[in-house]
Amino acid sequence: MKFTKIEDFQREQDAVSSKRGAIQRERDSALEKVQALKAEYAATMARSFETGADVTSKLDSLSDQLAAAEKDFRRKDLAVTMSAGVKAKMPADEVMLAWNTEYLPKYRTEVFNPLVDALEKARDEYYKAYAACSASVQAVENERQSVVYTLDPNYGLNNRYIYKLQKPDYFSKTARYVIKPEDIQKLAVGDKPDNADLKGGA
Image 1 (tube, one colour):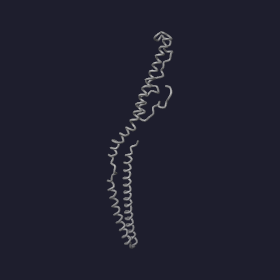
Image 2: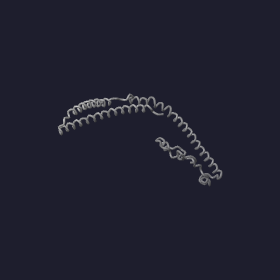
Image 3: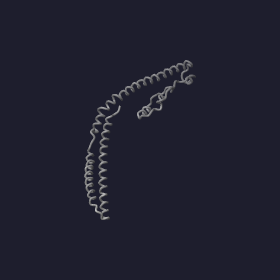
Image 4: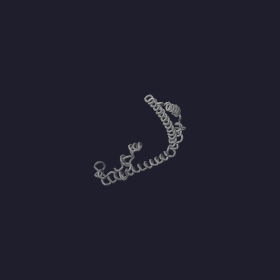
Protein backbone atom coordinates (compact mmCIF):
# COMPACT_ATOMS: atom_id res chain seq x y z
CA MET A 1 0.00 0.00 0.00
CA LYS A 2 1.21 3.47 -0.83
CA PHE A 3 0.03 7.00 -0.17
CA THR A 4 -0.40 8.15 -3.78
CA LYS A 5 -2.01 11.48 -2.88
CA ILE A 6 1.42 12.91 -2.11
CA GLU A 7 2.59 11.92 -5.58
CA ASP A 8 -0.33 13.80 -7.13
CA PHE A 9 0.54 16.78 -4.95
CA GLN A 10 4.21 16.62 -5.96
CA ARG A 11 3.33 16.39 -9.66
CA GLU A 12 1.27 19.55 -9.39
CA GLN A 13 4.07 21.29 -7.50
CA ASP A 14 6.60 20.21 -10.12
CA ALA A 15 4.34 21.42 -12.94
CA VAL A 16 3.97 24.86 -11.33
CA SER A 17 7.70 25.02 -10.65
CA SER A 18 8.48 24.02 -14.24
CA LYS A 19 6.17 26.71 -15.60
CA ARG A 20 7.73 29.32 -13.33
CA GLY A 21 11.17 28.22 -14.47
CA ALA A 22 10.19 28.59 -18.12
CA ILE A 23 8.78 32.08 -17.48
CA GLN A 24 11.96 33.05 -15.60
CA ARG A 25 14.15 31.82 -18.45
CA GLU A 26 12.10 33.81 -20.98
CA ARG A 27 12.47 36.90 -18.81
CA ASP A 28 16.24 36.38 -18.51
CA SER A 29 16.55 35.88 -22.26
CA ALA A 30 14.58 39.10 -22.89
CA LEU A 31 16.86 40.99 -20.51
CA GLU A 32 19.94 39.67 -22.29
CA LYS A 33 18.50 40.89 -25.59
CA VAL A 34 17.90 44.37 -24.15
CA GLN A 35 21.44 44.50 -22.79
CA ALA A 36 22.90 43.29 -26.08
CA LEU A 37 20.98 45.94 -28.07
CA LYS A 38 22.08 48.67 -25.63
CA ALA A 39 25.67 47.53 -26.00
CA GLU A 40 25.36 47.51 -29.78
CA TYR A 41 23.76 50.97 -29.74
CA ALA A 42 26.59 52.34 -27.60
CA ALA A 43 29.23 50.71 -29.80
CA THR A 44 27.61 52.16 -32.94
CA MET A 45 27.59 55.62 -31.39
CA ALA A 46 31.24 55.24 -30.42
CA ARG A 47 32.25 54.24 -33.96
CA SER A 48 30.35 57.24 -35.32
CA PHE A 49 32.31 59.59 -33.04
CA GLU A 50 35.58 57.95 -33.98
CA THR A 51 35.06 57.75 -37.75
CA GLY A 52 32.53 60.50 -38.40
CA ALA A 53 30.36 58.03 -40.32
CA ASP A 54 26.65 58.62 -40.63
CA VAL A 55 24.96 55.90 -38.58
CA THR A 56 21.59 57.56 -38.20
CA SER A 57 19.63 54.80 -39.94
CA LYS A 58 21.47 52.14 -37.97
CA LEU A 59 20.75 53.94 -34.70
CA ASP A 60 17.09 54.39 -35.64
CA SER A 61 16.82 50.68 -36.34
CA LEU A 62 18.53 49.81 -33.04
CA SER A 63 16.25 52.26 -31.19
CA ASP A 64 13.18 50.57 -32.61
CA GLN A 65 14.55 47.12 -31.76
CA LEU A 66 15.51 48.29 -28.26
CA ALA A 67 12.07 49.77 -27.63
CA ALA A 68 10.42 46.54 -28.70
CA ALA A 69 12.90 44.47 -26.64
CA GLU A 70 12.33 46.60 -23.54
CA LYS A 71 8.58 46.29 -23.96
CA ASP A 72 8.94 42.51 -24.27
CA PHE A 73 11.17 42.43 -21.20
CA ARG A 74 8.72 44.44 -19.10
CA ARG A 75 5.92 42.08 -20.05
CA LYS A 76 7.98 39.01 -19.19
CA ASP A 77 9.33 40.57 -16.00
CA LEU A 78 5.74 41.18 -14.90
CA ALA A 79 4.89 37.58 -15.80
CA VAL A 80 7.61 36.43 -13.38
CA THR A 81 6.13 38.57 -10.60
CA MET A 82 2.63 37.31 -11.30
CA SER A 83 3.72 33.66 -11.50
CA ALA A 84 5.03 33.87 -7.93
CA GLY A 85 1.43 33.98 -6.76
CA VAL A 86 0.29 30.99 -8.80
CA LYS A 87 -0.47 27.99 -6.62
CA ALA A 88 -1.08 24.35 -7.46
CA LYS A 89 -4.72 23.27 -7.46
CA MET A 90 -4.24 20.79 -4.61
CA PRO A 91 -3.61 22.51 -1.26
CA ALA A 92 -1.34 20.91 1.32
CA ASP A 93 -4.24 20.69 3.79
CA GLU A 94 -6.09 18.44 1.35
CA VAL A 95 -3.16 16.03 1.41
CA MET A 96 -3.08 16.12 5.21
CA LEU A 97 -6.82 15.42 5.39
CA ALA A 98 -6.52 12.51 2.98
CA TRP A 99 -3.74 11.01 5.10
CA ASN A 100 -5.62 11.40 8.38
CA THR A 101 -9.10 10.36 7.28
CA GLU A 102 -8.52 8.00 4.36
CA TYR A 103 -5.08 6.49 4.03
CA LEU A 104 -4.08 5.92 7.66
CA PRO A 105 -7.36 4.22 8.69
CA LYS A 106 -7.24 2.04 5.56
CA TYR A 107 -3.60 1.17 6.22
CA ARG A 108 -4.44 0.16 9.77
CA THR A 109 -7.29 -2.08 8.61
CA GLU A 110 -5.59 -3.69 5.64
CA VAL A 111 -1.93 -3.82 6.68
CA PHE A 112 -1.40 -3.32 10.40
CA ASN A 113 -4.35 -5.20 11.91
CA PRO A 114 -3.64 -8.50 10.09
CA LEU A 115 -0.04 -8.31 11.31
CA VAL A 116 -1.22 -7.67 14.85
CA ASP A 117 -3.50 -10.70 14.62
CA ALA A 118 -0.58 -12.82 13.42
CA LEU A 119 1.62 -11.44 16.21
CA GLU A 120 -0.98 -12.24 18.85
CA LYS A 121 -1.30 -15.80 17.58
CA ALA A 122 2.48 -16.18 17.54
CA ARG A 123 2.65 -14.77 21.06
CA ASP A 124 0.07 -17.26 22.32
CA GLU A 125 1.90 -20.13 20.63
CA TYR A 126 5.17 -18.93 22.13
CA TYR A 127 3.65 -18.78 25.60
CA LYS A 128 2.32 -22.30 25.22
CA ALA A 129 5.65 -23.60 23.93
CA TYR A 130 7.58 -21.80 26.67
CA ALA A 131 5.30 -23.22 29.37
CA ALA A 132 5.60 -26.68 27.85
CA CYS A 133 9.41 -26.47 27.78
CA SER A 134 9.51 -25.29 31.36
CA ALA A 135 7.10 -28.02 32.48
CA SER A 136 9.07 -30.70 30.65
CA VAL A 137 12.27 -29.66 32.42
CA GLN A 138 10.54 -29.63 35.78
CA ALA A 139 9.12 -33.08 35.09
CA VAL A 140 12.49 -34.58 34.25
CA GLU A 141 14.04 -32.84 37.28
CA ASN A 142 11.41 -34.45 39.48
CA GLU A 143 12.23 -37.74 37.87
CA ARG A 144 15.97 -37.17 38.45
CA GLN A 145 15.39 -36.52 42.12
CA SER A 146 13.39 -39.71 42.38
CA VAL A 147 16.25 -41.62 40.78
CA VAL A 148 18.78 -39.95 43.10
CA TYR A 149 16.95 -40.98 46.25
CA THR A 150 16.19 -44.43 44.90
CA LEU A 151 19.90 -45.00 44.26
CA ASP A 152 20.83 -43.63 47.69
CA PRO A 153 18.09 -43.03 50.29
CA ASN A 154 20.31 -40.56 52.17
CA TYR A 155 18.89 -37.03 51.90
CA GLY A 156 20.96 -33.91 51.75
CA LEU A 157 24.62 -33.49 50.91
CA ASN A 158 25.48 -37.00 52.05
CA ASN A 159 23.63 -38.46 49.04
CA ARG A 160 26.29 -39.90 46.72
CA TYR A 161 24.29 -39.17 43.55
CA ILE A 162 22.79 -35.75 44.21
CA TYR A 163 25.58 -34.06 42.20
CA LYS A 164 26.60 -36.98 40.03
CA LEU A 165 23.26 -37.42 38.29
CA GLN A 166 23.14 -34.54 35.78
CA LYS A 167 20.44 -31.92 36.03
CA PRO A 168 18.32 -30.95 33.01
CA ASP A 169 19.96 -27.52 32.67
CA TYR A 170 19.28 -27.20 28.96
CA PHE A 171 16.41 -24.75 29.46
CA SER A 172 16.94 -21.28 30.90
CA LYS A 173 15.79 -17.69 30.50
CA THR A 174 18.99 -16.89 28.63
CA ALA A 175 18.75 -19.76 26.13
CA ARG A 176 18.93 -18.57 22.53
CA TYR A 177 15.42 -19.80 21.75
CA VAL A 178 13.95 -17.60 24.49
CA ILE A 179 12.75 -14.14 23.45
CA LYS A 180 14.54 -11.57 25.60
CA PRO A 181 13.91 -7.82 26.12
CA GLU A 182 16.99 -6.94 24.07
CA ASP A 183 15.61 -8.99 21.18
CA ILE A 184 12.41 -6.93 21.22
CA GLN A 185 14.44 -3.72 21.35
CA LYS A 186 16.39 -4.73 18.26
CA LEU A 187 13.23 -5.65 16.39
CA ALA A 188 11.69 -2.28 17.31
CA VAL A 189 14.48 -0.41 15.50
CA GLY A 190 14.56 -2.75 12.51
CA ASP A 191 17.55 -4.84 13.57
CA LYS A 192 17.68 -8.61 13.66
CA PRO A 193 18.11 -10.31 17.04
CA ASP A 194 21.33 -12.30 17.43
CA ASN A 195 19.42 -15.56 17.62
CA ALA A 196 16.98 -14.85 14.77
CA ASP A 197 18.41 -17.40 12.33
CA LEU A 198 19.53 -20.00 14.85
CA LYS A 199 17.85 -23.38 15.01
CA GLY A 200 18.53 -26.56 16.89
CA GLY A 201 19.63 -27.02 20.48
CA ALA A 202 20.21 -24.54 23.24
